[in-house]
Length: 122
Image (cartoon, rainbow, N blue to C red):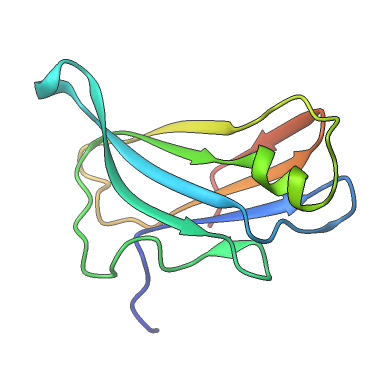
C-alpha cells in the first residue's frame, strides 16, 4: 500500500448526499509548552470527492497530544449560493494518545446547513 498522510479528512454534504468539495481545512496541534496555544500543522482544500488525502507528508511523525481540525464551512455554503446556515466553521478537536502515534486518523464531517456530525473514520 502506498504511503499516505497520517491524518486525512472527508466532508459529505448530507443535505444533498454529495461530497463537500472545495472546503478549506486547517490542522493544528495544541502546544502546552506555549500556554496552550494552537500551532498550525497543515492546510488543504477538499477535492471533488470531498477529501483531503495529502494533508501531511506521509513521512510526518505524529506525536501524542490534542489536535484541532477546522473546516471553513461558510466558504463552502457561499460557493453553493446558500446564505442561510448556522455554522460558519466547524472545529473538531481530537486526541492522539501516547502509544498510538503510528496509527492513521481519518476525520469525517457530515454536514448540512443546520447540523453536523463526525466520528473517527478508518
